[in-house]
Length: 218
Image 1 (cartoon, helix red, strand yellow):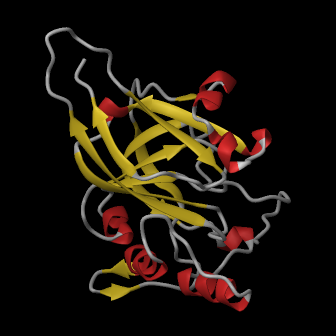
Image 2 (cartoon, one colour):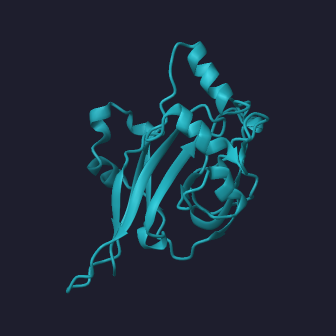
Image 3 (cartoon, rainbow, N blue to C red):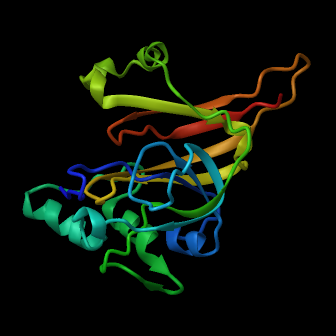
């Protein structure tokens, strides 16, 4: 586990990639969306919590004594007798997705991007942290996760594009991470207007559940 100069490791930012390209290619083109929800070493000053568009990303692993690259992370896990579980991606798929760039691969030298570098804040995104009552409704108790380790947030899903997306979230030191494949769909228009849906993400450490999410028309 890495350790930053403040004595702890924070979460990176949550990224949405709708482009169908690798993470670094989408980042270079400023085509990512990201959610900033926890203090980290992005160096962006007082970056407000919430949803950002036109996002490029960068790595902060070097400042957190983290792994130099994804292969280093895999090797460290293997040396301890384990295997990397990266949610909806295998370890090999995750490494390809996170390192592929312009026909080649960029791994090592602390190049795995895990926080927002630049982006535009989405106005009226509805971002808010979940209350204790909302967290209780997510029924994380079956996983025996301590209350202090459980948190979540929500935002207006209508601010996201429709289509297939790959979500990724990693620690600042990339000692752990997760990917989730999701399809965002518009719901059919109904006779009685319904409130715009709120995308809710409950995070148990880095536990994310895959699936299909629908966006409601207001």
